[in-house]
Length: 353
Image (tube, rainbow, N blue to C red; front, side, top):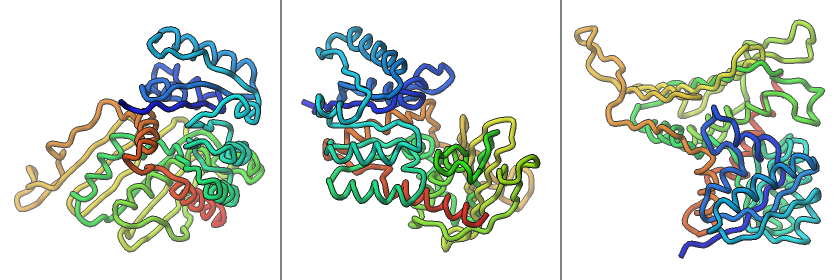
């Protein structure tokens, strides 16, 4: 018989709860929905300082419990304070889905209560100094932390990582992020209100994820090009490209825009034998074959036999990784170490500005 684990959600806002109602997103798209969807997890409590949000969360979760009566559990408890929650509950899994500027205080408090596992929403913290405190506390209390860098769990990105070994020596990794949010503003260091941290952490982390398959775990200091400042406020950075070179990949480019009128996230990996192009809503895999256009030449063509999943299961797989880890079946796929690596890359970019 499979083990059952209790869980609580701290932070019942967008990523904690309400993105689960976005009909355009692949579901589950929030921590609450992903936890509810796992048969080995039972949610027992929620916590948020926003009373209205918390009440809505409780109504929904309780309705799910009543709908699936076979769960045979009491209705969830709600709290506005983490200490009060732990006075009344002893959850196995604690999901922390609060705003970035509250990650440090919430994580330190929760870890000190010694749950079996903490799921921490990305980024780990506002900066690597705060992240190091979380890591130190995690080691002190022997509480493992899974960081929700969601693409590490997505089937399409894992298929891309597996395919890297089939495209020869890697010549280039080109990662791009497009949004309309300010890319960086030093005046928002204390609240994390800029895209370099909010979305850039995903872009940097997936580049590191691909590099890990090649045996590399870090990026050197960047060379910044394409720096673009807001014409009306020179303290706001609206665009940049960070360039790197490693032993395995001589050309790595991480381009981020904060002046686009659309949102885009895409990565291209070019090898000597093929190419991978992957991003929001698409994944294409190419291999060299004898050209149909030119005699004596080779061209790239869609690789046969590569199955592109209809659903990436990014959130569901993250929660399943938590369950499998607690069952002793596997390691965590996204850790404090990998999350801190991504933060340090972002800090190197800021220093280079």
